[in-house]
Image (cartoon, rainbow over all chains, first blue to last red; front, top):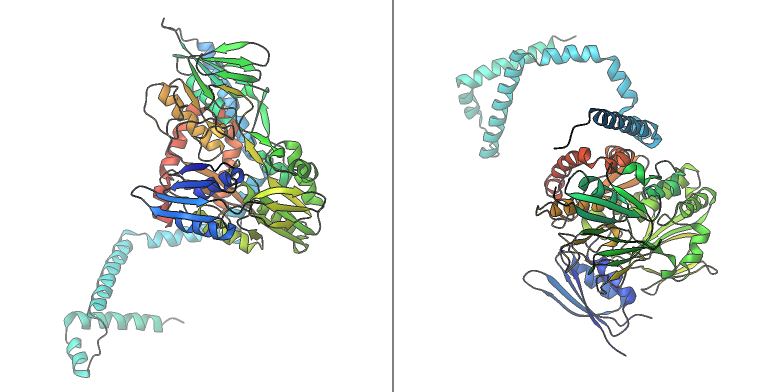
Length: 79
Length: 126
Length: 397
């Protein structure tokens, strides 16, 4: 099973917002895939935590870099 | 250089005019828009207001006379300054002797007599 | 006389038609526009058909919306060869160009979500065809009880406010019919809250609550069982319905574009978010729903992108600001707008009758706006400047 790492660049998007990009990518993702999302929307930090908790996927890393927020998640919960 | 064709210009203008009429027609046929517009503008009060327009205008005329406006501005300024100052001073409890001392100040006694004539005028209302 | 540049526009929707009308005024360009049908559709009308049975303003002949001098070809574009600057049409002919703007819009793919093609036959939707929209109208006007669901399948759908407009207008119809008490209304969205953008959510969540509409969050419609009447989400949950509309998958145009890699996995054309330029080609642009440079799939976005492309090819360094101006109806002659740009989240514009009137005026003037950008764009420039998200945030907080 090949694992894919995908970077989603959602910087500078406020509406609909980065969580939309994530949801879109989630449809095609498979268990084992790694999704890295870049965002500048400050609300994204709490959104990604809530999403990971609710969908039962794994949040590998969540950090604030100088110009963006980076979240790395591992897909584990897809049926 | 291209020649300016007057006939062409005229027909373009007429076409533009027709486009505008069509758009206005679209707007006037829009029942949702008409509903919304009447919701915004048509209240019982709107009609009453329109009825009373002459009286309202007369009243506005009185209020907007230069002397009245000047006086109102002056009163507003003085009042806001006074409120500011008293807020700076904070809560103060006056003793009887302090009150009496204040009465001897010319502005206070002038203000008090003005206040009393207002009270008298109000009291003379039937 | 110097040779004119051949400017080719693929698609005669809001983006393509307005671009054609702006460019044709400039004597440097010889403008050709290719559209697959003779008509230009005002897609927001689908919402009016679905909930008000109002078909007026749906479409007009594209020819009547194009300025004199635009060459209109009614044909289907099958292949675009960016390297050789050539476009192949269904009729067999080929058109070459000096500049191209690709604006064919998206294709609705009901089969992208299992069971959706069956669901839409029963209940319709307001994202595809007028026929499907009229199905919704029938459902709403004949349903007297049960659960009515609007569920978002593709979060990158046309018109971000539309699912909310849908459920709120449904609420209005049920109330006017006197059956609202017996109908349970549900909107299911993939996001952590009703509306994805937090600031605008404050507005919309309050309205949904006031109207008694249930919201299911973290729900991305993934499959529909029309026998059991259930919708199952990617996140593993299920809802039951008596009538339901699923916001379908939006895919790119069915055009073969060479070289490969110009389109992404959804078939959208990858274009620069500020310049609309297709990466690697300074003579090719992509605007509107089919391009990745549109942060929102709306007519306003396509219109503003058309302006940017026109200015750029005339030598100005114009850039997309990401400005959105999405009219949002909430029923009962009230509305608001989602106003945002790349630098600012949506302003908290409260619903009012005035906003609804503005929406209707835009809609009624739409054909004139497409046909005469030279008249309307200066007006819109003033409007956009004075209602910039920056200003609105200062006023509204």
